[in-house]
Image 1 (tube, helix red, strand yellow):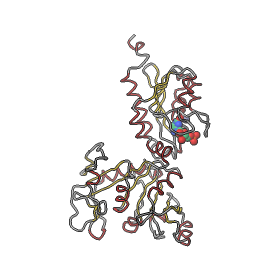
Image 2 (cartoon, helix red, strand yellow):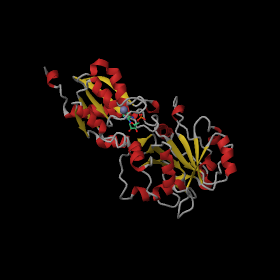
Image 3 (cartoon, rainbow, N blue to C red):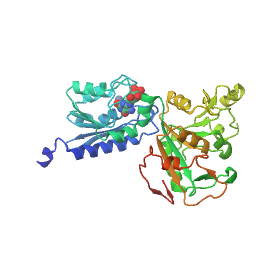
Length: 370
Ligand code: AOF
Ligand code: ZN
């Protein structure tokens, strides 16, 4: 009897199922191309009868996956979904139509999809079919998970995460730019997971010349999840024998160069498998225009961008107010005199004491703090 009385779940149960949908959706982060990583849960009489998330490359969509698993049982069920179900004919028919056809009784959705192809029409189509639709549960969390999609559609730029790994005295390298171990193994694993959840990772040419990095995800079994590697390389100085160029055929390498970069270099790097993308210079300071870089990346489908260095790029991102999120990892040991400051002359308090930055969370990761 008690179970019957719960046919319409409580607000607490609604929230729990939406949290599960959010968790499922995050499985797709960094794997769904330009598509948002959506999660969906189907529930009937207090039992989860289907779970789904946006699949690799962006299709099938989350709702369709959940419906497929539930089969006939979906009739009369409640669907929890982290984004408005689509209403457009893309690579397959609209999710809204599939939800109607399956006989779902109620849809709880976290946020509207600002994609002009959808924009409220998904919810409208469900309501027109007599389905009870509620929008807005866990909206803030969903907007955060879908920030890349929302910003790409609304502002033609990706969601930007700046990662800084600093020593106890806020340095990122020893004197003479010598690389030193700043953070430990646990922090490294977290950063590699963040790489996997990003569409692209960006560094400056200075970092490439100093460190010869690979910028891949090297967690066990996750090499295929490596992001597109992007280098701000205004005059195409990247060495042909760098590890980035060597691996350009396995993991994409995009070189952001000035419109006047040498054509011969572009040809040579293109032949090695890199893609040269020309963007405008900054009007007032030397270097590429970062807003133009972000726009070019968004135009090519990047929704989640991780910026990993070095100090000059970090400074430009902070000074230009271009980061949406900052991951500040701090190791336990100081580097001392002559070390390279994290923000190239800007004090770190430009972030930590700035009124427009809000600390979301703080935790220990191994011997480091995040
Ligand atoms: C959903 N469920 O799981 C996702 C949606 O190119 P298409 O046809 O796959 O459509 C892409 C658009 O669909 C994308 O820009 C976004 O608006 C929406 N993504 N919609 O119903 C999903 N990933
Ligand atoms: Zn869909």
